[in-house]
Length: 601
Ligand code: ATP
Ligand code: MG
Image (cartoon, protein in one colour):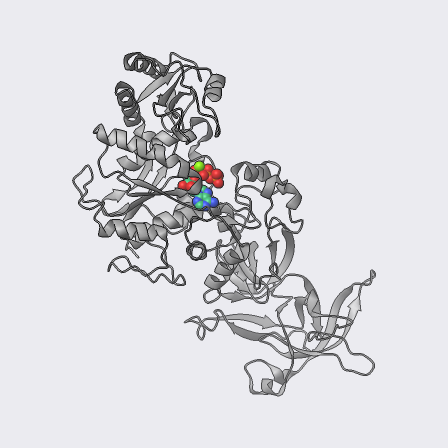
């Protein structure tokens, strides 16, 4: 791992170490290509504009700042930043901000935040490698002028309809625009007038002059500049023409000395144009050789999730969820708020691998990665989520006895030393499900005495063994309290405790000491593994039980829980103190995931 990676990844088993040059991570086709390029010296001996040597591997993560990042982006982030880290290279964060209407500073900020949260950064000894395509607008413009002058591009003035018709389709070659033969001088003059703001949106467009008969639609004279009288979040009103994504992307890559430009498979058909642009502009002396190369891998698709921006926006706008960072959203802000760790996401992304074949990854592998990450390190705590009062009738009313339990699980180095403390008193809260008036077979928790049998005995975890003596019901016939007696010599950690063999072991919290807290029990947002497959209405697949809010009782020490702190609530799962709604002394908890997968069964 490179020194500048500040994230602490104790549970992600990265076999590879970049600094001594050995890379032993599970290989994939991208690693094979990179290693071959390194061995072949393809990107050796390059220098940046300040004469600094350039790394052999320079990747980039290029989001468009038009929305929140989601789990699929995490994959692209881990692939790009991960490869750079593993091969002692660097990865740039570049905003592809060429669509003024859709982009906003708010999105730039949240994207920066999410990438950092995932544990990556874009700094190295030469500085910060954070870029904006909009910073290249001047250069992009000059290169377009060059292409026009060289007869490699022209201004097309067809109507949008004619342009679409003349483009043809898969079975039918396109037709040359009547403006294709315009002289470079005429096109250049028009382009300059476009830039000067003389024309309305959509009246002229600059197109690369390639081949209207190409079987690849992307080579049928693709657009490179269009008119948009729109305010840009960074360049303001300086421009009324904006470069197209397919034109901007290869040039941005080349200007930043990217070596391996990694994207998802849907860009495969765009690669010939990517190469065309770089060839023409490097031949023209505008870009350094060797130029970057584009490689495609398959998108990450996770079951029980939708990632389309439009659909996510619909969930937010229609208040089906409580905002972009709702813990049920697959956005990185949502996943973070839900309680996922960056380490678990990296582990998940590494495990899903890099391939060229599309497939679905089951949500349970994401949940499994979190359990694996948190199990050895999350502090334990007690929480009663659905409380029922247990009255220990033979426990003196004003007595309070200290009980102790380790904060950390056995695997943790502080297991034996860090202790949490909570008293036991006459009245304690237990889980409603830990009492059964008429027990089913194999039920070993609290059950009342019957005519021929005493009540059951259970251990109040870290406390005493108790025997159930009866229960109360309210006017509606619901159990309102359970009664028991305790055995004074049975306390956990004392000699006498060994004399009591009980099958049930339940958790509890002293009523007088309990911390009342709001706990949000989140579950998957959809109950269909493929909510929007085949054009299905994803809203019909919503899981009606994806959020339940309960008033729970927590052990008293939990009042000190800080926002974003994660715990294992024993028997229940992993929970995080909500980063937005928790206040000092009064945390609100989100359930991140239960202890076991209850979906795959
Ligand atoms: P979406 O269409 O899902 O909203 P996008 O492609 O519009 O995503 P960009 O900001 O353009 O969002 O994406 C930035 C990078 O993230 C691109 O390189 C894109 O290929 C990659 N990416 C987006 N979704 C996924 C995914 N599901 N798996 C892997 N990479 C992804
Ligand atoms: Mg995109």
